[in-house]
Image (cartoon, rainbow over all chains, first blue to last red; front, side, top):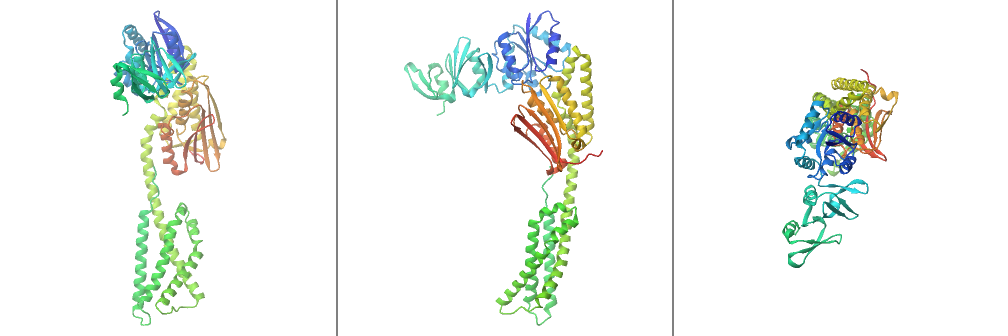
Length: 244
Length: 356
């Protein structure tokens, strides 16, 4: 059974997909979403196997939603778009599934066939990483705030702290718990952050001072006053990135 | 883009002619008086020279400050009238200046400048100056008209060239592929559930395509026609975004009769959808208004929510501005400005009644 989430801001477009997908015995419609934030929340809550993800949407575009997913655990993605030359070139390049509007039943069947073959294979990485390249995903992070999801500015994040399969995201105003791995977050957020410990990474711009401790470890003091431990393993990497 | 008026060419010609004229005047005067033993050699030089100096001063003033009268070149009577209204001032200052100058130079050389009575001088010099002024105004008028004609011709050529280029670009840019494919997808979706409605939508899309093909082959249309296109476009979008948009239309009868570049407004309405509706999950209100305000036609498209990110960068806006500049030069403009509850795109252009 494939559990499918349908995401499109236009009701007629959702209706069409629901109608056509509904005729397949091995497909269950897990839900529908009409904008980017709702889509991200639905992916989080419903954990679908497959998402048909429209690109042009209010709030968050389909690409931006995909860019904020954890690349290893993301559902299979099929982007749906009417016209987006640039993104389509990137999809072709990276063998990412997409449907061009309007599409007929044959085209959808082909897409479903590919999805069935891909299930179980770790093929979604390319969809998420393509989406990250196509959006400014290193600038913004989607975090849960109560029942809602919201985008925060990556520059405003002070440090990241891994906690099992979660990461605590520390900003000046709040602490968010994100269900992503630290590796995946660092891959998305890029150069701005540097790892200082197996389970910690800091925003380079927030580092105020470094002072040596025993056995080659250091203490990292942030502008906010927080002190973190820099382990020997990551010392050279951090020193190389620190402004002189 | 029509270039700024360039008068340098005709100015150079004017000053060359002017120089030649005075050289001739001085040469003739010197030659005439050379045989006259009562007149010293420098006297004709002083007389003609002083006239030359003050006449040149007036010419420079004319060139510097009466430039804005050049817009009356098409109405010669008005142009000459505006210039000649200054004649009494010119005559008075000119005569006073040249005679005081001459008296001054004579006094410096220990001589006296003898001439007829002042009353006669004023009359005589005024008549002479009037003839002289009329001659030179005619020359200035001729040169300025010539350069205006050259400019107009250049603008016309440029306009024709741009028109050809823009016909294709118009179709491409104004019926965005994004819009077209989305509309087709909506029809494809509706077909499954509501054949009647899908059929209606398909017909409207065909109407819109037909209208834009027709529009790309002509430059101007009436606002009434343009209005129909906008309504057609909006009705298609209404299907896609059912419940998310409320539209209000408001145009005076007088405004609807106005002449307007074809397919000028649709990209603006498209922007309202693209940046207002497609970016917002909240209901959006779009208001389309047209009014005649004095000599101008104002068309305003307002949407609640947001506008294009960086103002003036969208291809739709740029296209719209370029076309306004081509057709109207400086007399029309497009402004895009946020207000209390959204974004206003306003087109202002000269009001002319459309005649097919």
